[in-house]
Amino acid sequence: MLRKTIQSLLLSFVLLCSVSVSAKDAAPLADDPVIEQRLIVISEEMRCLVCQNESLAGSRSDLANDLRREIRILITEGKTDEQIRNFMVERYGDFVLYRPPVKPITWLLWIGPFVILLAGIISLMVYLRRRNQAVPSTTLSEADNRRIDALLQDAKSSSTEK
Amino acid sequence: MKAKFLIPLILFVILVGFLAVGLNRDPQEIPSPLIGKQAPAFEVPQLVDPQKTFSPESMKGKPWILNVWASWCVACRDEHPVLVELAKLQVAPIIGLDYKDKRDDAIAMLARQGNPYLLSAFDANGRVGIDYGVYGVPETYVIDKSGVIRFKHIGPITMELLRNKIIPLLDQLK
Image: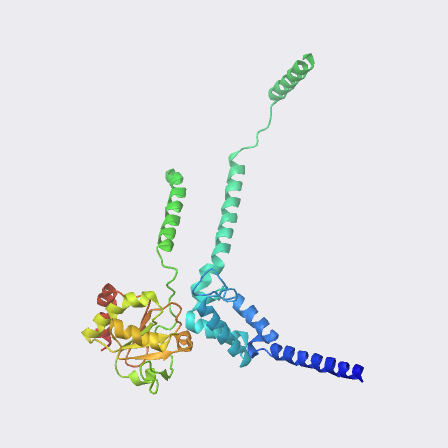
């Protein structure tokens, strides 16, 4: 009898606990891990406008909080990443994107380094070719060869003497 | 090619030129993509009378100024006297957008420093601010007759800016 009471007491205690635990776990919509994951992926690619050296994902500024909230809402509304990016760009300009889009005004930004690299390679090649031409290859005469032999001989004998 | 030795010097001068321009720019001033576009629509309660709402639609037909402010924003307090001066000139109606503020604090600030606004809209959660690309209060917009944003200034406006930019622009828009 006593055992049964204890058992039932324990059971109800466990049940109560689990109820309270699940009540705690019933988190707001925002904590849906799938949404949070997408939010992080999107917002890591965006600049926080208040603290410009931080991403939107990492910033704790008030505006960043609000913008993350907006992005969460857009995700729950079923918007695509593209649409969410457009939402941000329409309001804050391309500046929010860490990767500037390729369009006429950013062509120089995207292609510029490669143009400079190419110019460097070409000027290096031209320079090397010119230098090769500037140093004419000379053929040694008989007299030159004899002089070289003599000098080498001299060097050898002086090193063995020591 | 006698002047060959000048090439590095010229390149250096060009580099310094780029750096001089770049370093003198304010990184906080981001060109708004909203200029030349329709001012985003919204409808929120007014600050003083929450029963009434405000919508930019109601301002069509005349140029007007939208000033985003808040009582918690120190720069707004500095800017406030300039707005009071501007209101006295009566060049255009000034509408306030009270951004993420407490109603009582905002009303107290207007009572203390004067109220240059025809009315203030109350943006409790900052949602309207997001649509206008607000990222640093105060911000000021000049909107024309047909509801197109013509000018935006980030940070407190000064008497100089009023004289040189905002008032001439408003005259031109009339």
